[in-house]
Length: 197
Image (cartoon, rainbow, N blue to C red; front, side, top):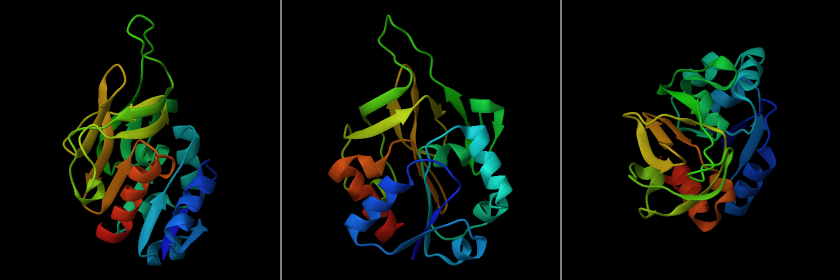
């Protein structure tokens, strides 16, 4: 059973629909005991970092998530919250990944837009999470902030600057892109998480 952590951020429906297409059993919950007993955990999210962290704190889930030993996948802001801190709302985050989340800087001259929205390629692919993908495959992004590249980066992308498009540390994984909105390639990533992580 997969537990999808419910902390009042957007994107739950598209993640649920993606898992339904894969025929995977899941539950949407903020119950700490259910989350701790799940085979795998998804921390999705669309929203603002400081308020999202506040929701996790209100539900008493920060220490629960950090202590999980089963595979955990953070998606978009879910991954950002697993970093050390975020410039968005000056949020102190969970500190699982040793990197900070920084805002993109728009630049009309070079065509850099904020938010970074749409399909972009990923490179420097590592770990079983990204098995079957090719260098330069395109995934779907919607974000104005992104983690800085660090030793835990397992994929990079670029929007004015290079950033960590995916992270991995032990049983914790994260994607800045939305696998649930990235067609067959995103579906492969979710399958990899379910079957190989």
